[in-house]
Image 1 (tube, helix red, strand yellow):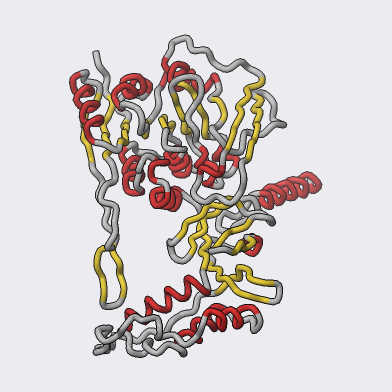
Image 2 (tube, rainbow, N blue to C red):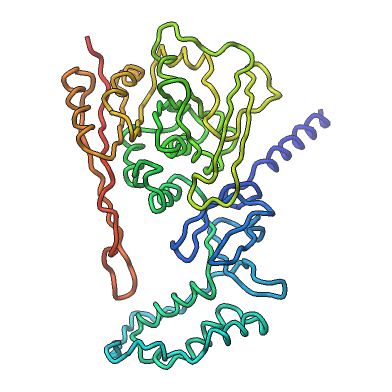
Length: 439
């Protein structure tokens, strides 16, 4: 008995050791690198040979392995050259509620490129020969500036920030999850995700009532962002079934950015509309079900690694072969398809930018159970208005409404709080409703 207990404890310890800590960037996981406070957002997969290019120099990402998400790194020059080094945040002493008025302004300053005494050659000597760090170079630039003391306090902060980005760039290690991935793609390649803003994505999940143990039907044509967001909220419970028209599902390469565990990945499946809707759908044979997955990492914004091709074979009755790790997901099992035909899905989310919402909704809505909510995203209003009219005429749904999400970001700093000067004024539209029984 004691031997069995020891064996069980050792197996549990092995399983725990195999599960990566979601708060720490481990080797092989995907990370989001924030360079210079949002100037660049870069997706990368950590490995010993992965590199990040800042300016004209490439830096190894090996120091990031094992660091907790949220860590801040800075470019430093040492004996072996420039590299990324982790820096700890320094607490600034609060000045209390005393606000001092600054009478200085920039009216008398003349921008003639003669205010700085240090030349580029002298700065290069400091970096290469003397091994000066970025902060030391910035202090030297401030000390040799003729106009720094005459500038307004806000102008001094902007000057420091500008020099810091040039001589001491910083990299923030961020964890990829639904919000950060959506924000990164919306900033760099909005067309890749159908111009789906983060507030519209959260509205989709809310209107579709995505909760634990839900079976969510998803039509994802925005690169896999919606599929990953739903799977993240389910947390390894229920199922997210990515449906499609035709012979093959749409690409969902973004799913691999979420660093899902095997438990969550097993809950992401695919099945065509024909298989789910036909009374005698051709289900996959018992035995071997093969899914070939091709991932092109160059499609993501500034991805560091090259193209990766993965082939995953899922065996229905064998436990020795694991579920595919990344890609479109495994084929839905025969039992699951039959269960969904009988009971229907608990909710539906559609994000098909290049398709007509009504042509898809009339085929997909019957797959839902009665009283199940649905949410449909589109960049433009008119296709959703037409879809809403047809749903009303066909008495297929109630509580229909079209919502335009609105988001305003604010800059909150001491003595200066105002909306951001540059914001996205448009976030698409969401049509939501509840499916009903029609006679």
